[in-house]
Image (tube, rainbow over all chains, first blue to last red; front, side, top):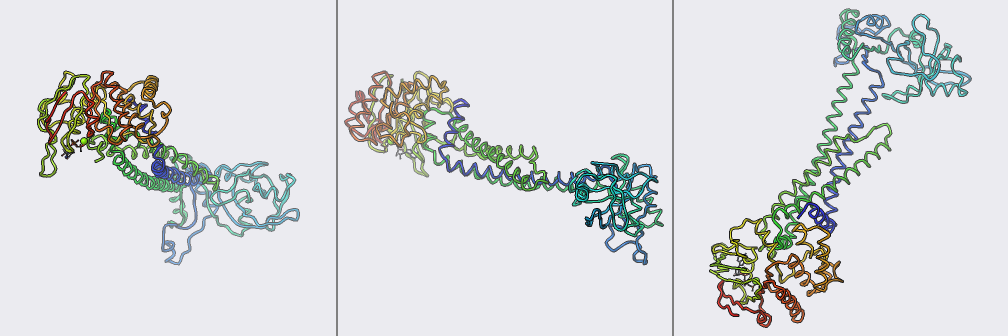
Length: 400
Length: 223
Ligand SMILES: Nc1ncnc2c1ncn2[C@@H]1O[C@H](COP(=O)(O)OP(=O)(O)OP(=O)(O)O)[C@@H](O)[C@H]1O
Ligand SMILES: [Mg+2]
């Protein structure tokens, strides 16, 4: 019997045992769909996190006050010392390190913004002109803070704030009150949306020394540093830690983290997670494979006399083996295809429900899911097919 | 031409031995019409299975159309069955999922004949066996006589040299059985060797040669 007839005949068989076939196809499809959906979720989470981090800036090194690793307080705590704060001088000091391309000190606080009778509380960032390139922020209008000594009482507004306070669109050059001081609007941030739980459309940015004055402090919340290159990230981290230790009388009272390290960790964890859920889903495919094997064995038993007939008509063992084999192939092919479609439908549903989560199933997972379905189906049919081909025709015909 | 020489077929059930065929020697020329009769368990079906290459004898030689087929491999035996032997069974053995036409088409498919030729040959067979208006019916929708006609059409579609029928009328009433026998005899007239196992004396008597069996041996052979 040639290939086409084998496929046609076995397809006919699959179709005519409707309930049985539907059950198997469903079992396989659910397994494949699970692989596709779960990996889409895992991959989506990974991409989401990676995207959030990249939006923070590239080659980013972040300096924050205090030691994060020590569980029992700061090293100096036992001696009654409080950890030293991070200051603008610290920031200027590390800017001279060769691995540092640029830096931006950062102060954060909340203050009341008011203009034209409107009033609301906003998150205020105090920084310098370098914040813009380091944080990959863009302006939609005007200019950012003036550099160095030219800085004055300028304010850059998030897009939402600009719209709220100046609905007529005339923003640049307008006066606005922040706390007790007056500022001149120099620029408006481009719409960026939320990133890392922080909505940059609703912030105001002012020069760092104004911010320190506003919040009555001389410390910094963070120093954002951009290393010269990817390879300079780790040296920069070490150099900054070393330099600040020297400046702080040998105390390691700052924490230097690199976005790359965090990102790599998240990336690794989420990749492992994706692989893990894919593996779990694949187990359900193996279960489906056992189901296929069982059903095929039952089919061989049910169709014993038919197999005997085929042998009496002169079908060689190979033909009979191929017929059962093709039957399993159809079932797993249908299961794989339907599962793939279902899985993509599911991933689409997830993306629809959570637009921020890029839940696209990775290609490798779809391929692996469908391939696993095919392979388990085929493997599961080997034994039943061989058993059918081995049947003694006389016994088979008599239904024994 | 069929030539059996001292064929023995022994079945072992635990420590019990059944000599279903006990040194059977038999020559059947091409185009003969032979009936095989005998009590239940005398070895008639076993003999037919050996002749049809469905079963292997434990000893003895079997020569079919001049060549020794005793020691053929399973695949070669399948080919010989396909090309030279047609089986007709008491219980029809139609594939329930397939229509009458598709059942008849099966041997053509196994032989690897192209679809266009298959169709014309199946149409011709449906015509010849008066099944034209039943072509698209499944076995469950056919009467016993129609089912056996489909089975005979299927058995003869590849024009075998020998047609082996094991109680072909066993599941049919007398009148329909006679019709089926007439059909088989028509094929014999067209040149096919016809071997019929039957319990029906009347039907058995219509053959041109009568073989009687008892306890795995041929005890009578008359023309
Ligand atoms: N597969 C088998 N295993 C064991 N014994 C068998 C087997 N097939 C046939 N026999 C035995 O061989 C003997 C001959 O069987 P066979 O089927 O050839 O008889 P028969 O003449 O066709 O009988 P019936 O008229 O009832 O069909 C019987 O005793 C039967 O029990
Ligand atoms: Mg019998």
